[in-house]
Picture 1 (cartoon, rainbow, N blue to C red):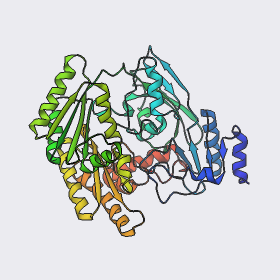
Picture 2 (cartoon, rainbow, N blue to C red):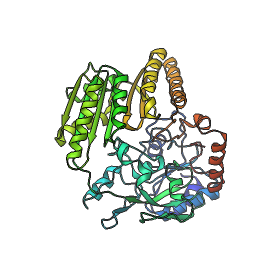
Picture 3 (cartoon, helix red, strand yellow):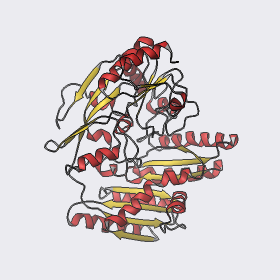
Picture 4 (cartoon, rainbow, N blue to C red):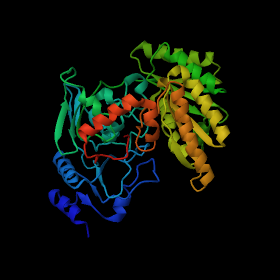
Length: 455
């Protein structure tokens, strides 16, 4: 039987919104980061509208019970890890969307998948650019919570660049509208931006107004393989110093071979690194940029350079890059990093990670949104081997320290969550960390929203 407190919440919500079945609840304990310290929640609440979220948070405030907001659970930093005796508030059933082609905006609920938003706006001849590798399974709400990036953000920007407005429910159940469909609006503090990337620690997003673009122009794709990681990274710097490609992605030898093991698409298994780049400039400029990238790759010693304007051929290489994490994951348990550095330091970061892998006797694959310096080192280990698990955890911290020393950040798009929280204060510094705490205290004085995440 559910606890009396949960029964009182269920009485305020539509039938079936509150789930206490242990087998179902267990599936909501962890996100994709698989935090081993995940707690056991009291219940899962699956609202369908803002009013349901308000009722849930008012109830949680009255009873001082933690609430962990959750999208589709694809997060990689433990930001949606359940806590003992708390509530997991899943937005998966909040799935409405309205598209306005005149203003080029869409108003969407947070439970829609990124791919579903893309498809809905494409039906009106429009495009929503942010494209995490997990775009087919991650939710818009989760993307906003972590300020997700993706493959095309080197040119088109990240999630926050497309968020014009939000409806947010605060810890006490107050619903607030921020921003809206206006492209220019500087009245008041920039509160909309404050909630993007806040990982559910300041409020629960129940509606978002998204900025849309005309359809993406047809792209030319250039793929190059290298015998040297440093040469590939230097080629990236040469390209970005002159043009802004629509995509510029990096895969190391481990990722190349892991993908080839699964997809059998004829990738060069002897290559040390591979770059996948696209240009989508309209008219002849797209071809010119592709030719420039091909020449730059050749100049930096690429062993093979392949160019195509065929959409299917180009899409196959992009799909190979998107599949890198699942392919490497097949080799063991993963600790997934998300560090970013200035482009000039990219080669030093990748080389440093390579040396660290040898020192710690670990397999560490590096894939990267190379065009903006955001790398995803993938630490492979055997979770049943305590000693290897210890070395993997050490390497996880070493990589973040390395990135910061190179002038970079501990997270570019996955968020801090719980896994990176120990490094946040050192990265931000005491003054900025205190400001974060003061904002959290002002908006969530009882600390019920996603406790243990970020702050």
